Length: 335
Image 1 (spheres, one colour):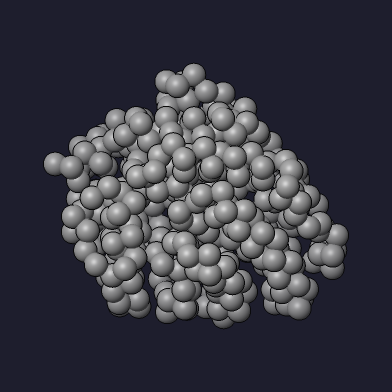
Image 2: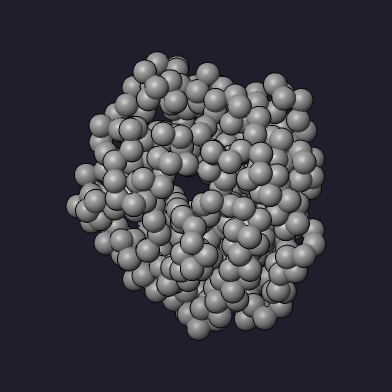
């Protein structure tokens, strides 16, 4: 089986020959400083050039980093179009939000709508098209920011979280607007050739929202995005960071094909809440960055034994992660 076949088999509820090893991109960035230097890439340039974006994603795949390609390599393209200030990063640092366009939830109506026919949206669209035409047996993953994380890139997170309790109606209005725009972005990526859409919503973590707010402010909006992906006939993955154990029963209401969790969430707890659903994880991001390759092989094999259907870094990669540690995950399964 190739990795595209393995993922399809898992989503259909069957067992593949072995778990695939993927790192979607987006929040779960698969690009490192060593990889950039090896390929002669300038990271701040690839975000605005479709040929370079596609070439870097393919370079990661060809160097046995993972068994997929995915773009973009950050969570800033969408929120920049919604008014956030963005630093495009460098070879040692991913792009990040540096300015919020809103100071209060009352200002949510100031958030503009997407024009997916221009700017970085078209860069990402063209990169996906290049990759899907060039690598027909490799899953092409389009990455989109989840609703809560997009909202907390437009307003100070502390203001947003307090507003859930005191200004819930306006928080819903902002999340509804953000979600509507994300649906346009999802459709653009799928039409360009994406096989899988990955929704990453780290700011929706249960340890911050708690069960009540997670159920009210995260699940419905994520599911609207998942429904869009399903209508288009593609596979959906949802990743939420942090300690999700207190809200796993609520997270089970997320209708994605595959759910992805941080390394601190135990598989025993996941299975108690979610039964035989397809689960992605869970090799420690910190270990990949700081441990030896033998340790990564051990962690990868343990993840398989624990029952993870898709193997991946728990929360993407730190930029200083060595390539030998990344390749060790595939080595562990190929052996």
